[in-house]
Amino acid sequence: MSALGADRRCASLECVDELYREQILEHYKRPHNFGRLEEPDLEFEDNNPFCGDEQHVTIRLDGDGRVAEVAFEGRGCAISTAATSLLSDELVGKSREEVLRLPKEFVLDLLGIDISATRMKCAMLGLKVVKSASLGEAAEWEDEGESGDPTEAAADLKS
Image 1 (cartoon, rainbow, N blue to C red):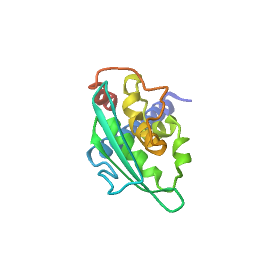
Image 2 (cartoon, rainbow, N blue to C red; image 1 turned 45 degrees about the horizontal axis):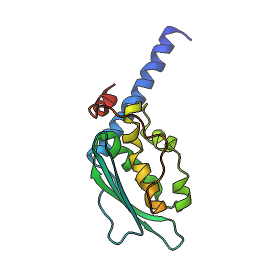
Image 3 (cartoon, rainbow, N blue to C red; image 1 turned 60 degrees about the vertical axis):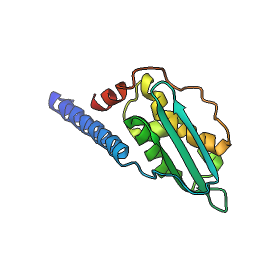
């Protein structure tokens, strides 16, 4: 590949990265499904003690036991809020079992950017809370990331 071709490819990858960063900021500023459902069938809340992110999810199921409606509320960094917002858009129509089988890569793919080890717990908080709601108790979680400086979340979006 010529140097010019490599420059164009890198430039287009940077554009894609920038689009994902803009999407994350948009979901942070205007999260989808934000709020609380009245009389939910499932609900759970949890937090990230390393940075103070908090999420509370409420889920209403249809007659077949599939997610009919989902809402979340809480406070957190851009990555935590955006990840939960993006995830909430994907849950309608899924059974509890399907929700429980969602891998962390599902959320990482929705975010579309590399997430540092210190931000992994932020990115996974929504998935952990949704799975816990589906179980009716705290979900076991093997990879919660590492403790770190919460200001790194903003740095992740800028780099």
